Image 1 (cartoon, rainbow, N blue to C red):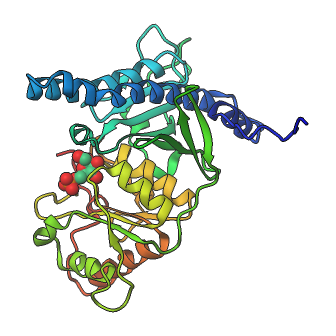
Image 2: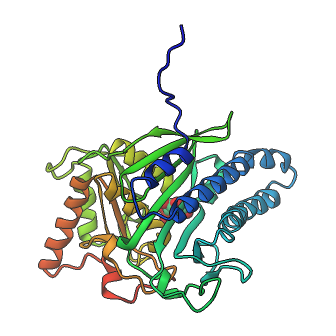
Image 3: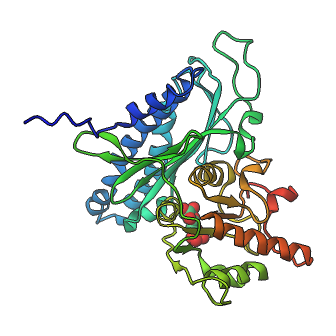
Length: 362
Ligand code: P6P
């Protein structure tokens, strides 16, 4: 007997089209960007999967091959995304963790109404120990006008330096035990798992939500000696040492996308505070913090740089760093309140640097 059950197989292409149809005025440009990013993700995944083989093959010259391979992988991921995105006529500029300045759309291609900012392969130093790595991306509508050129005018740094709340889409790819593509366009967060046997991302995690309070604390406490006292107090709270919260399990693998993804599913907080050695924190606002913050808020979580919502920070530099506390809303709120109380008492907490200006790419 044939069971005419509806196909449970929803590819990312089908899902993107169905989401687009929810918006009467959608032109299909944003859908095209997401589809092209999914293609780039598949190409990067196939290379990342074989990185280990290069290590084995390069056993004689492990260091050289591995070093070149890592560099190649970072640059391969950058080139793959650039070449997947430069000709679609939907972008007017790009920015990448791998490139110091704004990346223009090549002259021969039409320019469009969006900008793309991305970290092509975050955590690539983890590849040689087989720890999951990730790609992170952010899409924002241009603010500069474009009607002086048949192909559309080039985007400017002004189009890139917008607060995270202006994002129209963001997402990440985690190259882990499976490859997942997770994104939002402001209508919830949806996760797709790559089925290598057919080369398609299939909907596996519709409408992802992060628990209000979480199990996991992800922080590198090797920096404890460099943290301001309020940060130390916060970590004592998360560890249940002040009796005001049940202790969280510490899970930290030093790969932002992998740590964030686990906390999105299981609940918890990822924290990379500013410290004496990194007074602006380590993570980049525009193509690491902001895209994950958009995802997190859409999943019911929160993201701050200290006392303030991360998505409200007005960027001043393309590669500026920001402190980051991101995850379960209730747990991030603990951090915000604690920093606010410290600020009220006049005790420095060293976070919120971007709000005081002077945040720089250094
Ligand atoms: P630390 C990887 O190098 C990375 O950029 C992120 O993926 C990760 O969260 C962070 O740095 C780890 O930094 O200082 O704890 O080694």
